[in-house]
Length: 180
Ligand SMILES: Cc1cc2nc3c(=O)[nH]c(=O)nc-3n(C[C@H](O)[C@H](O)[C@H](O)COP(=O)(O)O)c2cc1C
View (cartoon, rainbow, N blue to C red):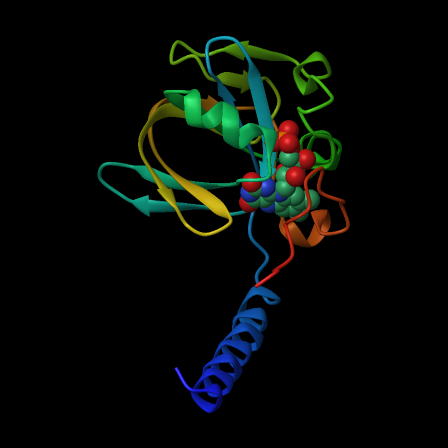
């Protein structure tokens, strides 16, 4: 590639990045806690990059940052737990989003039980599902986990905690900034 073509290409990427930020900055998605256990170790983190991706069968994609302690445990786990947080659960969002399993056992600080799938289930949330991980894909700085629920229920909490109320939190593992 010539220097001029390279510069033009870089300009296109920069413009696309700005355009993407215009979308991302308007989103106010619900907040989840994703949990995993590899048979030995439990882990969990706050996640906003979660979406339904199939109706029948019901399936979700759960994106976990490669920086997170939870990513390593989830890679060795057969199942994940996915918890939608209620509107008053900013404390749970802080626990799972601002602390890291590198240094803290978050499960010492919440009530939970083990699902037959092996995934930890938080007692308090708006709603939860657990299920097997059918596939994993490298999406960039996150790993996408395709989750097929095999169990689930309510968690006694009302409403939804959305990103707008959690955006002030400081992630235990901030996203790595671009170096290329
Ligand atoms: C508002 C907010 C949204 C977040 N969304 C995600 C996400 O979608 N996926 C992810 O892997 N981490 C996300 N994080 C970051 C992790 O929750 C955070 O780095 C956590 O401390 C990692 O814990 P761990 O190292 O124990 O896995 C988010 C953090 C915040 C504050």
